[in-house]
Length: 86
Image 1 (tube, one colour):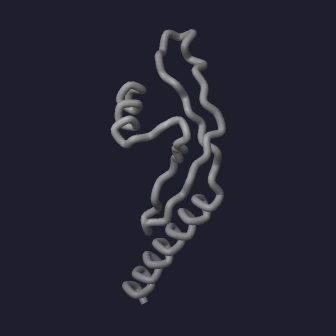
Image 2: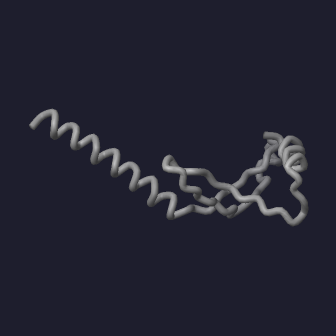
Image 3: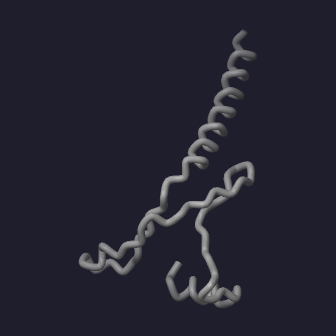
């Protein structure tokens, strides 16, 4: 998305100088995980690349959630294998 498009969309939504924007996403089960911004940089301008890099802070709760979901899936797969071959 270009900055112009983001600004236009924010204006459509009625955002002003006091509005806070959060970045994150929902897990598979609908839980929201917020990712704070660690750094915004423009280090590649010297390479003639016109973009801005955003580095997000790690979210430990998100990592735990993903591991839990994967463990559940693995457990289900193992039960299927055991049922099939035993």
